[in-house]
Length: 277
Image (cartoon, rainbow, N blue to C red):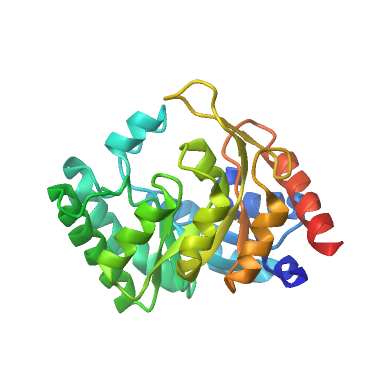
């Protein structure tokens, strides 16, 4: 499992950079030079991010994968994101589809092979009309990425392991995979992440290193914490990743508070000690 150490990276959005230069500075503070890149700023602020490839190249930054959000996401509570997230809402689907045309071109500039997103809450019943609608939309997105030589990664958490596995089997698109986030399973109260990882392991192409403590008040969020200080069983997590033959990058993510560099740096030290022992 020591080989995982050479595949550690950071999610750029966790560092909240306002420019490519600031992202490089904060990656240096964390102590890593590999990044999963938020692709949305390239569409929203091209004047700021347009020269990022050259800037990253001079600094030796490795972009290992990309991420995009969908329009109108509201993470106020688990219920608000259920209604607003991913490709599910009809009101935002067309705008999301238009944005994706730009996002794919941005990902191509960096030569990316994996681009991840939250697809939204996946219906559990194949007989549900919403199930067929979401399959159709995800298939359309997947084939757009496939034409560019990319894999679409579903981030976990908004559904249980069995529900995600069932949806992927029904979808049947060869370039759709999983970006596994163990903390999201806890935050969304969707079960123990270790059995879920074992179940969907053959689909996993990316991984987020994030930790959390479950809520004590149903319907509210739990708490994100530094990797190694929450409820994820990290020794079991890395053993399971090894058992399922995971070959991708492991990207630190932290999306709360104003001490993110410090929290991610502490998580990196924890993982290095655990895997280096």
